[in-house]
Image (tube, rainbow, N blue to C red; front, side, top):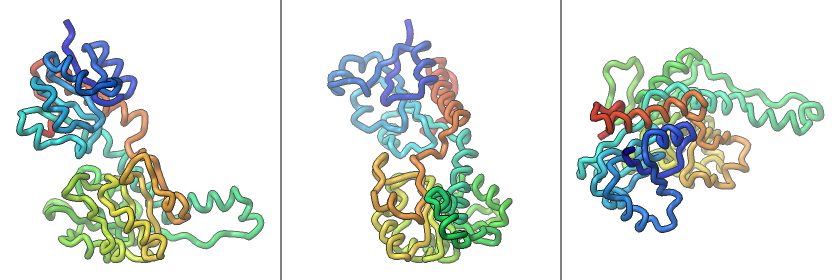
Length: 311
């Protein structure tokens, strides 16, 4: 008899297929009455798979739950403290997405500095032929890049940008003595010293709105803000106002406060480059992430150590 697994949210097809082969899968996202659905299957469930979402109410509805296997490196949508209090293990999918998310950060930075999207529109509109060459863009060699969150992905971003001749500085909870980059205890001070500010810190209450008006003003009218972390990290209203007022030069965003909604004000501005949360969205990386979801569930049911535990 197959073990039972709850699928909290829709998953990638290769994950869904693997889970259906190995387990009896219950799709919470298809239930018309969530409460009744969970009550009916609660006794048979010890594990759940999710795209980064699992609240306390879900955990309380499943008294035998032992594992939440979450897709994604971020787990701010999972109530970690409640899971810990219940003795529920939580796993994520770290490391395998470092390269592609770091590449997205570098791509956004280069796209903003060289005005790729803006000049693409300029050419397509026939303006190059009609008006001549557009204004010069900016190079990045010798520029200072401040990284908010020098974790695994932050370090990868730093290494990649060093190749372009950038000076790297960083801000986080504490200095990392094994890193060669200058540490700033104040995010505002780092922003004032930087040409580019890249956010790649965890989401959640601790970092909510940390990139605020003060930080954006410190970055200044020649500065560029890049966010490949979580939309909650920046104050969206303050960001829009800074861009509109010319107090901030440009922004490259892969994440937003209320995804998939993106404020019209951001869409309308030429000095903003937007992506629909595609940091890890390559075939290779998403498959590797899905494989970790599958592997953690397999380890749980085999009584083996979990591959990538958070709790």
